[in-house]
Length: 353
Image (cartoon, rainbow, N blue to C red; front, side, top):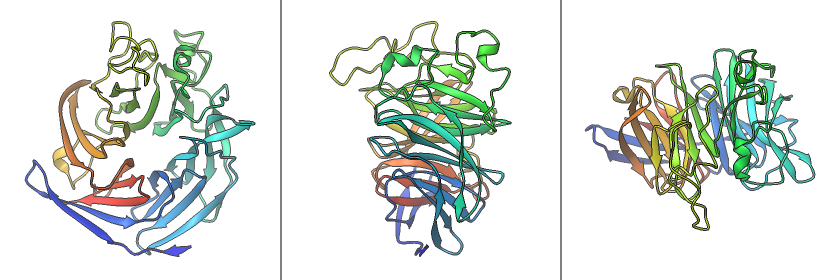
């Protein structure tokens, strides 16, 4: 357990709306953070990739580690990744060590406790793969279901193989059982029962909109071809038949940006900005942004605001760029509407007016 000192650094800057924005660093020296989740208005859970889970009490300014029983293998982009608190339960995604160096994007659930959480797996992406790439790993609760983004682990066309989980969006019940109305039980008989949508590469952002009750996500392309789009029942984003405007890192062409028969994204970025986390904004602090998508970037270290309607792109605004480093996660304080962001510099920031 350690004490923290709030307000260690403060940025002030203006924006197109005519009000001043403040960026306040509230925690530093976090070792490779990946995700945060609010427990209540004063308590936060956050993860470190190396496998540690922490509880932060903002009011008392205290950080304490929570012990757990997960078999996490930190390998490349893998480790202890997303965390989601919901109704006294904690859900985490992680790269689970399976056979030797083989890992899977796995999801576990446990009852919240400030000292120790005993997790139990409720999903494992099959098959396990020897790769440190593209775990995806975002978690979203919608109604009585848990949505999971499973990256394609750098294996390309596996995202079109409906008998394997990597490269897909997963939907399960909160206890890990399979919903009876998933695509397999309707019109996609060859699909694995957990699969909700296919054809994604590395979706590291996913968020439920409180305005239309739809889930939206961000997806890393290759050398170009990042995108922001919606999660849609039984549809296919086309990786690696489509290249979304990008190319392989060798410079060779992948495929067309889009063609009929595949899901079209709302917004593409070519060249890549390395999109990471996202949130659909709802709150009073920046009420001018209600309903807009807030999207963070690793490559150009920016926070961007996307205005869209009915799955159609309207406009994009860069809120700030280069102030706090590569932005790994973003969450909205449900009571105040203030934004909380984790950076790869090992810092937690708060943004407000």
